[in-house]
Length: 91
Image (cartoon, rainbow, N blue to C red; front, side, top):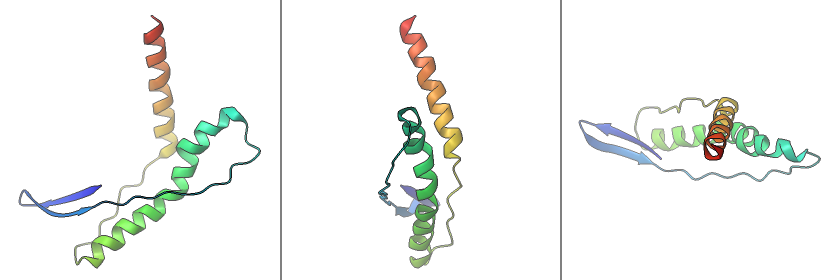
């Protein structure tokens, strides 16, 4: 959900739900978390970004381009946090 404020009042709220259907075949089991957590979002995000921009501009507001997300880096950071939490849990 994206919200824009104007003088501390809400100008608009954009809430978009998006999903994708992917055929994932002949992938090693250990690669599946990366495919679902980084590769698929990398494919879907440009479409979400365009949908948000279209909704906002069709509502007569200035163009709103969402900042690109590096899903590969986000996935790696999440994996490192999970590993750190697992190590702390064992201590």
